[in-house]
Structures are given as structure tokens and as C-alpha cells.
Image 1 (cartoon, rainbow over the protein chains, first blue to last red):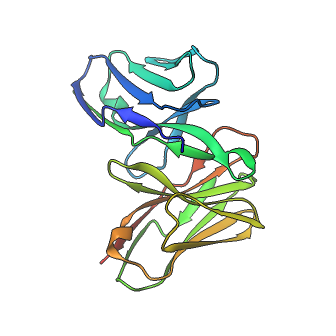
Image 2: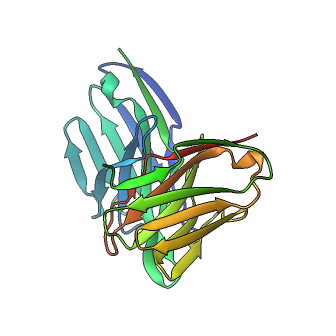
Length: 115
Length: 112
């Protein structure tokens, strides 16, 4: 079973601070995704990383895929209250005879940024 | 209008009752999924379907059943609801060969 473990589970910081969220597995993933979920809404995709060692930037968010494609990190620079939400990593896993038909999620990281 | 629509958005039901949660999508995707979300547990897969004739159990299918009535519709049923099925339920779609999953807004179910 391919599992994804996220840390930390909770993060409460002040506006302007930097933070990093980690997503780790003992299994190799063909790609990893990061989603953000706001209260009352479903998760929305932020980014997909595909190549080992890949780094992608989305404004103040930096996403990195580990060289061995077993882990990923999300770094936020100068966090703002609007960054508050639940961050989820996810990766495709095998489903029956169809490759990568399922999407497995980590437990999520609840980020609160205080003004 | 939302691409993935779930109904109802909120539901309170009694233990032992049968309840159906519905999901419809306008994205034209073949793959549809039902997830359950509990605090600290992320999203756990209940059932998934790759087309109308293909239904598969996920990690936590006990106590649930599904029906794929059409490419665009995928419903989740709780035959006899119990309190530990109280959770937030999400429907999602994916294009075959695609990476991104598109989620509905969720159904908050409370079993009393």
C-alpha cells in the first residue's frame, strides 16, 4: 500500500513568517500533487510535480519533488492570512488492472496565519 | 454552475436510516470517486468508477454502496447509517490519463 504522511498536522504562525510542509512516503510515486482546501469547499489543485528534483514556484509557494520521488515539500514565504487553509498532498496509485487509477491523499496540514 | 455538483450539501439522519448522496458532473470525465474526510485522516477512498460498467471498492467501502447511473452521475448510499459514518463526503472526477482531480463542494453528513 502506498501511503503518504504529512507533517506537521497543524501549523499556526504569524503573518510574514515562512513555513514548510512535508509529504513523505516509503514508496516511489510517478508524480505528487498539492491541493488546498478552504472551509466549505472541496480541495483545489495547486501544483503537480513529476520529475525527481523538480522545483515549481507559484507566487510565494515553492514546491519540491524529492530526487527519489518519494517525498515532496511545500514552502511558503512571508505567509499571509489568505494562505490559511488545509493543504493536502496526493499521489496516483495503482488500481486493479489500470495503472495509477486512484489518488491517495496524505492526512493534511491545517495552516492558520494570524494577522 | 459548478462542474461537480453534490446534493445534498448538508444532511442529518437517524441511525439505521438509508441515505443516498448524489454527484453529477459536467466535465465529461470517465473516472469518478467518492471520498470521506475526517479530521486528521485526510481523504480516504470509499469507491471509484472508471466507466458506467466499472465499479471498484476503495480502502473503506464497508457499509457503503454506489451506483453509476450514467457517465455524469455517481451516487453513494449508506444502507443503514451509523454514527461513525458522520463525516464530510466528497465526490471527485478525473479525466482518463489526466492527473488533476476535480472535487465537488462536499456533503456534510451527521448520523444521530
